[in-house]
Length: 254
Image: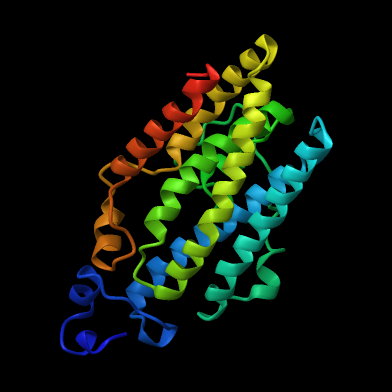
């Protein structure tokens, strides 16, 4: 925390782009919002890792299997990096990874919308089951593009240690998406594969869109005051929608 924070209200300091650097500088309300943000990320990465682990044996070849293994491993690693920051605030790191059944999924036709479900903070999209390789690749691409938009926002958070971790994670998450796009191009090269991919896109696209949250969110204003968010959900969703369109168009999947 710089000297500026000593001479102005903490919310003004944060709203002007100030950063906090350790748990000792963090006021209680900020702490609550920050931990909620980090828990949602950690829980989503752990659930994503568990979901992709189940797809490894459905991969059609060794290269695809290696890609699935890489995604499974690195998403767990990303969760661990942010969990270490939560440990600075008192989170029980040893117990955290086993306190929820991260591979649990709801029925395929469940209608969660944007609601949380169960005892963890994963995004709703990670409560839906993946069915087969094409489904996994499509989900990875659509959610990976969403992660790219979200990580760009999280790289600007006012808690400097978290911003640093997000900037380090971003290139690897992009690599996961790139692996998925490569796999999707191979799938879309045949008529049958293209039809299967389109069906999976129709299933996953609205569920990933829901992960951006409600429009005109009341919580956003609080997060903006603390420098934990900068752009509204509507803007992030629009960026993702454009990115999806640009990614799928060359594959004939729009």
